[in-house]
Length: 291
Image 1 (cartoon, helix red, strand yellow):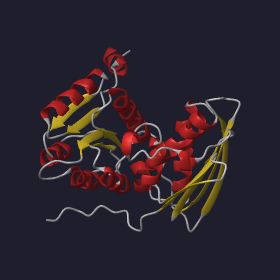
Image 2 (cartoon, one colour):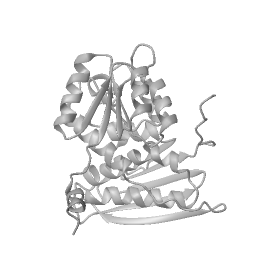
Image 3 (tube, helix red, strand yellow):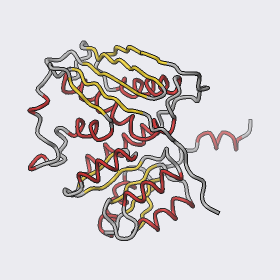
Image 4 (cartoon, helix red, strand yellow):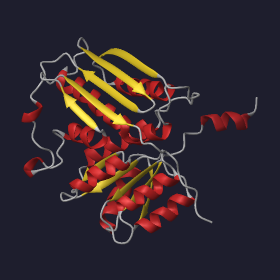
């Protein structure tokens, strides 16, 4: 028996690498220290240009960046990094006055956002979720002629089913020709938020209550409905998470993310069924660097 092979097999998996970008040294220090304590390898950059150089030279599993920075701002950095690797998750740190830019960044492919002042429990949740979704990949399948697939899924309200449902929808979308790079952005996050809202707020995590999903998929359009068996709610009565005391708070955060990411989000009158629509971008190519 080869002892060296046994030793290699028993080695712990490499730590996930996170690039932290912020022009404030204190924020960089707090984030890198906290992420290191979570078992991640955190490397920091003081501006967008330095971050882009580091990203082009080293592999990273996640990027966390401030929105407002001198020189190359966060949105410019997002476009540059997604041009190099569209699959890497990108999380923004945003201030209270950045709501329009947050929405723009989510439309452009950012996976999530954090608000200042940072809350460490929210940071841990968002980082863990982004890394987990990045690992949810469907196998590449040959793209066929124009196809449409309608999938019905029913599962109990249990958190462990969320990732599997997202994986199933992703797999089905690619089967009909939906672009892999589109799905590698933040559509998975919108699906997770819809499922989490349905299980937590609709069914109250009652495993006896089912979540009903219907996915109507073509190469041009992804339409997913999620329905719970709870009493429903009045969506118009939900506090606006982008204004006043409720600014970007956890309550209503999921609906804010869904609306920012998807092209259409609507609820049935009872409030226990949400339908989300995303139209595929006509082009999904990365331009080669100029000579």
